[in-house]
Image (cartoon, rainbow, N blue to C red; front, top):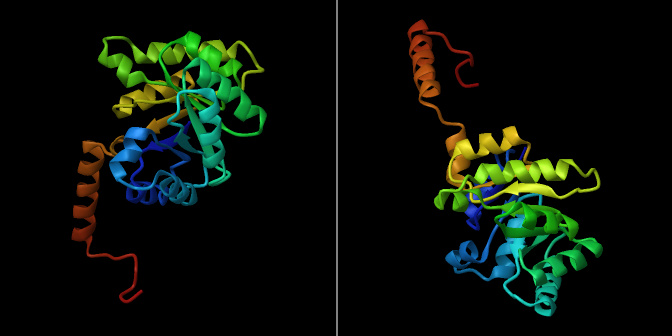
Amino acid sequence: MKFFIDTADLDDIRDLAETGLVDGVTTNPTLAAKTGRSFVELIREIAAAVPGPVSAEVTALDFPTMMKEAEVLRAIASNVTIKVPMTADGLKACRAITRDGGMVNVTLVFSAAQALLAAKAGATFVSPFVGRLDDLSQDGMELIADIVHIYDQYPGIETQVLVASVRHPLHVVQAAKLGAHVATLPPKVLRQMYQHPLTDKGLESFMKDWAASGQTILTPGA
C-alpha cells in the first residue's frame, strides 16, 4: 500500500519524507488556505519535496475554468496531480486531462456508483472519504470493499483506490486488508502507526539491561 500525506504543511511533509515512507501528498483548498501561502508557490515547494504524486485541487466548478486552472497547476511540476470534484464537470475535466497525459484525482466520492464513473472517466485515483461516512453512522470501509471489488472485475480499470478522510491507524489497516492501493493520512495518523506501548516498554527494558552490562558497541570517540 502506498502512503500519501494529507497536509499542506511543508515542515511536516519534509520531516516525514525523510523517513522514506511517503509516496505522495494530497492537499485541498481548506488545507492550503490555512497556510496563508500563495497556492501555486506552495504546490511548487511540495512537489519538489516529494518524488511522488502531489494532488492540487482546482477551485472552479465549471469545465472551462477547471481546464484553465489545471493548465496552470500542471505547469508547476510533472508530479502534480489535478484534483477535481465528483461532479459532471469534474468528470468531464478528468477525461480531458487524462487523455492529454495528465494525472487526475477525483475527490469527494461517497458511493460505489460515483467511483465507477470516475474510473470510466479515466481517473488516476479515486478518493472515497471513509471518515465522513463514519461520522454519519455509515460504514466507510464497506464502501472501500465495494469499490475494490468492482474494480477487480474489470482488468482494464487502472484507477487506484485512494482512501481519504482517514481518522486513525485502524482505518489504514482495514483499507490495506481490503486491497486499497493508497491511503492518504494526516501526519498525526502516520506517526501514530509506529507507536505502541509494548514497544516502548520493551525498549525501556532492553536499555536498562544494556546499561547494567557496562558494554558499548562504539569505541570512545568513534
